[in-house]
Amino acid sequence: MLSQTEALDQLRTLLPTGSTVRTILRHVSRSGMSRSISLVYVDPAGAVHDLDYLAVCAGVAKLDRQHGGLKVGGCGMDMGYALVYSLSRTLYPHGHPCTGRTSDGPRGVKGCPSNDHSNGDRVWRKGKMHSDGGYALNHAWL
Image (cartoon, rainbow, N blue to C red; front, top):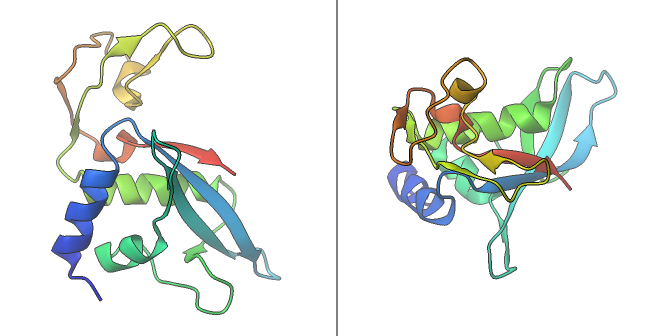
């Protein structure tokens, strides 16, 4: 098993700020209070990376050996998003640099995923530090 430091280094190399981590729902308990969710990253070259092992080594969540994926407890919100937020917060505990803004997104604008921009900060300057590292990564379901 990798050390936590090695896993974090590998994840930071693989997932720069602004990357999209995709989630796969593997199992939902009968009570609906826990789930098994896998983390997947598709790099720009099209290669698919299973992040479950690295996330376990980094201390993000525990592995669900019976159903595959990571054990996530709770309900009432998007638990895939919560898992990616937790991964992002683990990778960037002291915040993350702004990725800037471009105009080639699906709604005309895309760029830095930080919630600071939704909460009044209209400065989209690359390299500006955001305080919450949980928004460094984007989330999408597969």
